[in-house]
Length: 502
Image (cartoon, rainbow, N blue to C red; front, side):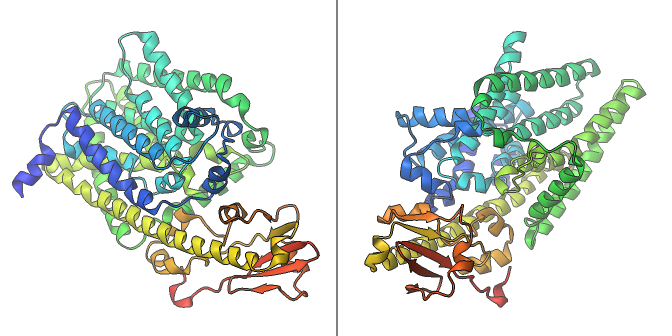
């Protein structure tokens, strides 16, 4: 046992750190690769090799697929983009490890692994198209933190371009950069950085963000659709809306803390508090004047609420607020903050105690595999639903020849009864899956059915206007009506299993 633990506490080189991160990051995404499930937007993108990223302000995502596929479109080449992003993330985490620690060990690597082992990041990585660019945006902001060059102009410009690149891949990654800037303050306090250098550190980061935003504004932002750029109405109690949005995010984050996760993260929080107290004692022991020590201490204290706010961050101020798990990339920095402070406390007691950080990491890895199994169940259910609809439409000539078949919009939390037990044990899985529909109309062309469209402008008309007609097809999940040359697919509300209600 001693030799095994020695492996984790002896100093390592860059190659060893990279190999560790490569193994750890690949294991985390392995369940998603094995599931091979086209997730929501992937369906229409794979059918048409569709792009449409530039109008979302994500021009560099579009260019990434143009370059990777050697085309002007985006044919599905999953899992190649995710594998490339995983390799890049391994290098970025290695760079960050040597940025944070002078003599890094595998135990030090555990502190930074939550940037990838963020449970909410699983939804980002579920997208076969969007997952890789989202991950690469994380890589860009990490390198914006770690980049060092003796030339002041290069040191200023390169991180700014990396920030602009990250924004053009996925704007929410700005939360991660700002959160890592907060951790830079804690690291400066732990390394006893002289007071005169604190102003330069903060000023550099502010200037890099500002210049990065300006570069983004002249490159990718002009392509952004106006509806996606709308901020909160500042004349209609915007802070109340921000408060409501924060409450909605908190409700979702709490879903993670269920069962054993409560105990694991409870102990992690206690260790982090102990580490914060130790860091505070080091600040008080500094040789600067009392006002400077108080100001340093205040900056360190403010990093905690700042990182917590950045869990959702910039998404809070947009009018079209999205509470999906894919917007909670900032939660990874909150985890790193807890891990960093916990390591300070544990290492001060015994050099091997930081290995206890493996426990929460294993819990998050277990969640990844559980989520992968849920995706597999969802894939089986979706495939069954697709062939059921295809069979019912193909077996009726009138439906095959209908000018158009409208599919009603019906949402429910109980479509996937096959995963009800998992949802009950780990409620966050249902939030991560985020699929509350029976079937997408975009799926049907895969089996040769091209006359089905989702009901939008005639939303829910099929549910209320045609119930007095006799259905042409009666299924456990839906009814199909035919009126003249038009068909209507009406979903049935699935009944929850009371014993497994989540």
